[in-house]
Picture 1 (spheres, rainbow, N blue to C red):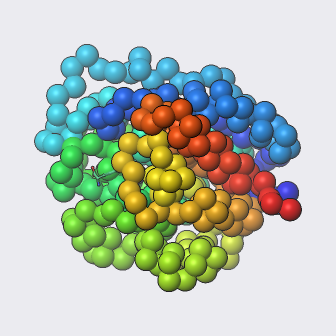
Picture 2 (picture 1 turned 45 degrees about the vertical axis):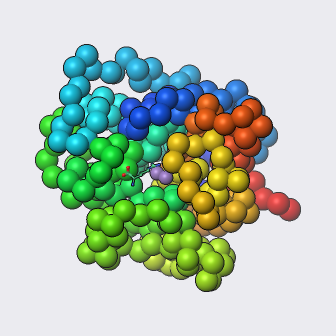
Picture 3 (picture 1 turned 90 degrees about the vertical axis):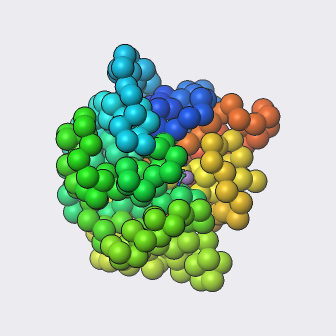
Amino acid sequence: MSEYKYLKGQTVGVIGCPFSGGQPRGGVDLGPLRIIEYGLLDQLVDLGWSVEFDGHRKLDKLRPTYDPDIGKLKQPRFVSKVCREVSKTVESYVRKGQLALTLGGDHSLAMGTVSGTFAVHPDAALIWVDAHADINTPDTTVSGNIHGCPVSFLLGIAGKIEGFSWLKPCLKPEQLVYIGLRDVDPPEKKILRQYGIKAFSMHEVDKYGIGKVMEMALDHVCPGRDTPIHLSFDVDGLDPTVAPSTGTPVRGGLTFREGHYICEAISETGCLVAVDIMEVNPTLQDEVSIEETVTVGCSLIRSCLGETLL
Ligand SMILES: NC(=[NH2+])NCCC[C@H](N)C(=O)O
Ligand SMILES: [Mn+2]
Ligand SMILES: [Mn+2]
């Protein structure tokens, strides 16, 4: 197993985040419970990790009694309070030198996870694997679902939104790289171009192959292979045949191996400090498809944490 340069020892802090407030579908809040039930923690112990897990966060307690839309944004106060809490938790694990593993929950949680990592490692790289760019601003979002907006908040281009003042801009465009994009809203494309954000869509994955894409992606955000890395992996980055049970599936995604290769290549750098596995919704499909989605979530995590094929 490779050495992890920014960790003290080999402990993973698991943060179960049963949260669905960043989008309209119920069930994504059951993702972390299913992943744990499936035996993730024992699998990580078998890989040689010490595991710290004190149960799933009680995020529902943070739901405000009154949470009207702000502009188009839905449940903004709830999302903000939850992400603030998650941010503190991730920060505390990363500060202790543990790998912070967040199980979502919807992808709005990344406002918490990424800000938590960057509070400790302001120079870190963010690798975002997703069908979507999740970079809508409160002005450009059509859906008003905040899981489509976390990156704009992290970059500080979301403008001032009531309740979000705790979230300071922490990410510079050059610290971010996307892999797997294929459903990017027109205003999001404009933002990606305007800020010169590096993105490897499925077109580039087809053109160069995943091996070359990972080399180029790492050259961009982690050129000396010594920059701390936060991986935020939305399982809808995978093809729906591989991860069917997710809220916003898009055809033409990463294969099973391409998804795992991304995790393996990042693990090999030894620079990983935090991982998010997001948008597993174990209610949207038949039991077989749900199990496929949960198991692929677990195996992506194992690849991040050093599992190899040989
Ligand atoms: N994390 C996700 N699955 N995001 C999907 C976002 C879809 C769309 N771009 C929106 O802003 O609503
Ligand atoms: Mn997505
Ligand atoms: Mn996403």
